Length: 165
Image (cartoon, rainbow, N blue to C red; front, side, top):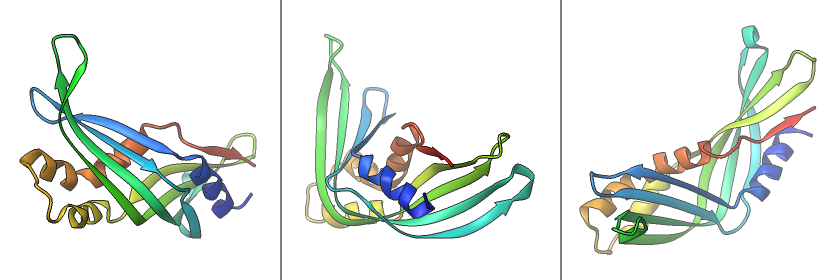
């Protein structure tokens, strides 16, 4: 399997990433990104070699035709459930990303491919553009500004995809 095919197979299985981060003493921000259609992997290129570790870094361009981003601020209630203070949804199209793939030669002399990062290149800018004309509280502005980092954090909390060759 080539690198582009490996990344494409992973993207077809990717449907949702979620993370939660503390906003203030009373609440947290929930970041939720649903991939409404599979991402498309294109043009994987060599980045660098680390001879001491026997691995290569590759980078692949990714295109997501449609995603939905939901940002929610919630806090605890007296019943240990969560109370939603405010929320905002963004249906987005044509989101660009970059996947970093590590190719390692392990001790049994097999090649291992692993996706180590998925960076959304302009997600915060896309959300800022989508938010124009909407009523934006301080929390919403903060959440939109941090969305790119939240998306990358949410992806890193998932199990990494690997392929042994």
